[in-house]
Figure: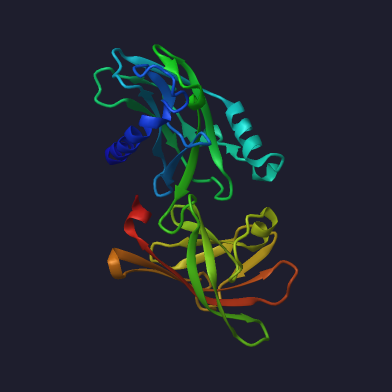
Length: 316
């Protein structure tokens, strides 16, 4: 955690040179301006590992200006749902299906809504911790905590950087939500009563819990569409012995079963190996069959899905 804060500090120190002062180039050089660090959409992202029941993210508050602060500054934040409403309207207009959601309170806690910037500190910023419990969140939704500066005990506030949307991203060993997690899939497919055929495609994994993720049946490409997800989604669980089990993401739309009659709970296995350049190769050997509700014939799947990845991408 200390390493995370230190890395964030170096990054924030660079950002603070512009983030708090760019809104008014005519201001006095020595003027001290309080702001919240975020991107141009007011979003600040935290990655939360599903291997931990609870993990800590941070909101960073900075004081810009050419001179150091000469007194302690108390900065108080408050919840601001209208910040999220404005974000959705600007970003997605009337397409409410794409709207970001406010993170439900059961998934996070904030011990103190604010920070104190210390005059004695060598840093120009301080961070406000947010405790997040990511398990149970959907990988298909954008979750934000909307906040803004309520008051400061000294100096002025940058009006363009007085609000923030803390975005919760999540990951496990196999996938993450801040970018598409793509595996290269290749193998065989066979419809019952028909000839076996070769298959290859890019396969998208989405994290669900510390040891499970979601894929689409067969080699179907991912679509961010609720009906498509319900119809095609399959939950894969990696067991302690690296064997795989599967179940439907929504049992009203799809059935999944093992193709090994002697091991009805066996759906393949997971392998992790070393490759060139300090990378690891993750490989899933999927062996299962599926059919959509209302269909009589099974589609038999015997596919390997793999990717090469650096450990820092997994463990960062």
